[in-house]
Image (cartoon, rainbow, N blue to C red):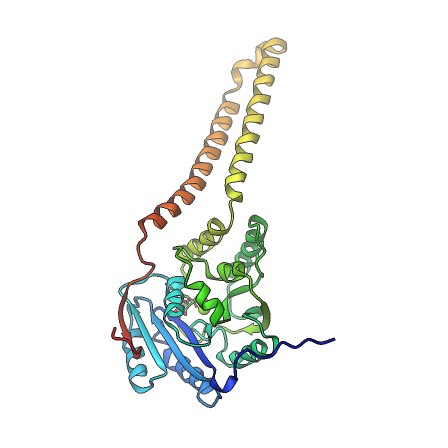
Amino acid sequence: MNHTIPAPINRYRMKVSVVIPCYNEEAVLETAYRRFSHVFAPSAYDYELIMINDGSQDRTFEILSSLAQADKHVKVISFSRNFGHQNAVTAGLHCCTGDIAVIIDADLQDPPEVIPQMIEVYLQEGCNVVYAVRNKRKGESLFKLLSAKLYYRTLNWLSEYSFPVDTGDFRLIDRKVLDTFRLFPEKHKYLRGLFSWMGFKQTPFYYDRDERYAGNTKYTLRKMIRLASNGIFGFSKKPLKIAISLGSVSILIALMMVLWIFYLQIFAHDHVVQGWSSTVITILFLGGIQLLTIGILGEYIGNIFDETKNRPEYIIQEKINFDEPS
Ligand code: UDP
Ligand code: MG
């Protein structure tokens, strides 16, 4: 029997918040605005386009201000400096007022035209989250494709939770999830992991990812590594356990070498002095393991340090078109 859960909200009164982080995106913003408006203006939904200027150095803020002046649906949050993609999305989610929110990049890699289909899935399934899964990824470098594939699978192996693979931050979340998200005080958020960790009813939505409309990627290798380590160190304690295993294996190897040296001393005394290379290898091997484990510990302690400082995740310099004074 088919149990269809009734749609939770009347679509004609539903408000959709679209959360769009923007960092040095002057080349795409006007086209992006046009495409988003084209999707929502004729629709039955009330909507707001929350565009977060993440401390851009180009004309992003000027363009966003003039879009906001011309159209009250555009709401702008401008940071005091670059706080990073995840913090920009977090600010948008904290400030949005919709019944549902859609997180989407500004560069049009995730086509805005599929959002109504995601809303349909949300209404029909009566779920809390619709997460977008990439069928194809056009225009990405081989390095990015391979590293992403490897990373998502490694994260699943390391973590006790299982996260959907080939899924970015492009997703629809409902008010219940938004309100729950507000209760998360942690810094270094790895959003795609957090939303999946939260549970609730989640439905995948498959789509083809386009090429970036214009400009270059704003995710430098450093930012990618930071995001990846937030995922691993935020959702897994396994690296600490791996450190213990590595230490144990190296102790075992050292003990075996002691036995071997004893054997040489007794049965092959003439060959003993030549062993400098094995000594160097042993020192390097053990030194490497020690540095690695200290590094892993440092990552966790560094995260604890940041949490205890309790600094805000972002600082808003200016807000435009929000009801409350900025
Ligand atoms: N972004 C941001 N702050 C940053 C880096 C990126 O707000 O420090 C935004 C960027 O403007 C875009 C989204 O995050 O809307 C994803 O970035 P990008 O498209 O450059 O990443 P990629 O798709 O290449 O991984
Ligand atoms: Mg992109």
